Length: 392
Image 1 (cartoon, rainbow, N blue to C red):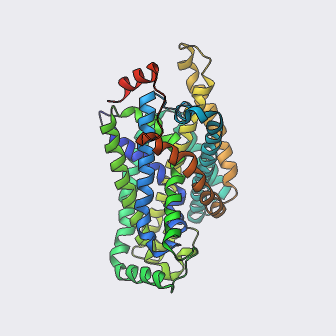
Image 2: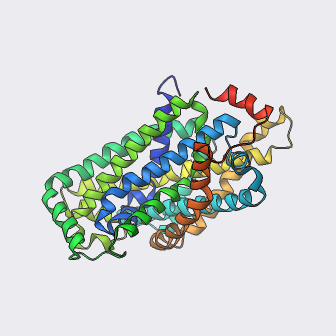
Image 3: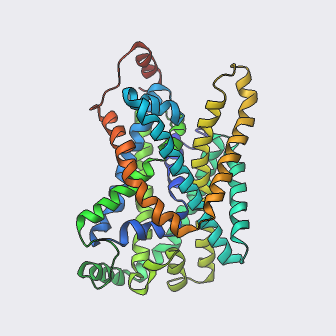
């Protein structure tokens, strides 16, 4: 992969393609976490991505330093002396987030396909599950390659969809922000800065729960400088696309878009463009849903493959790895598909909001404390040897 595209770009695009999932692609997360709160939410997408980027950088440095590229061994090293309590809770949280985020991806894709083709929601989610299953059993290299292709396509599509509407309705965007500021447009949250900040922090920390799916890709970066470039580029790309969606949806805040299940679809149906743009955003949402599902399921599949192969000899592991990957991916995908049958809005509204504050204290704060050196790792010969080999 590095021969075609630098590792830091691959990591940044894996991050984007994973972040750009069903809830984000539909525009529902932008409304729920930002626009539906105080007008100062305009600053919060950047805050969220800085939080997520910092946490991801430190988590990848830890993974490289101690050669812990699956989230089970990473969490044991991460939590150290409190691992007896924190590691099991972390495992539960990571799998809950995996279940929730992938189910949201299934639900979003299924809903959009039903709107386009009129096909069964259950059949649509089954088809998405099958695609995710195929991608996740072929390893991290395929995940990175697919992420590059998907990310380039999605970034270009977001510009095509939102930028014309932002240009056309820019005065309206300013007017709607002012209307939210004065209370003429009602939002669901308390009208104060701290509420907007809290939701911005929750969005960033919520996505920090997915670092277990990202750390495996840190192997393509040979040093901290490469990781810093990956995270810097990732923050820029993710923030840029979030702001395109934020302002694109804001242009229609006075027309009821905040109550729509799929605000992005409302934008293209009532804004600049035509039927072809409705098709384009629908494709983006479905592709975004699949890309998130692939990255998240693969991260947990990697952990389960390690777990299932822990007692095998070095000769047996390569032979059994594909079978273990297929079985693990199949079970995970089936569970997520079943949860997706509850529907999109309940999964985002009830699930994501409550997960953010849990992730803040369980993952984000400890990872940052480790990263900046406030909470130090125990020093022993084995750790120092790995550190020298893995990170310069």
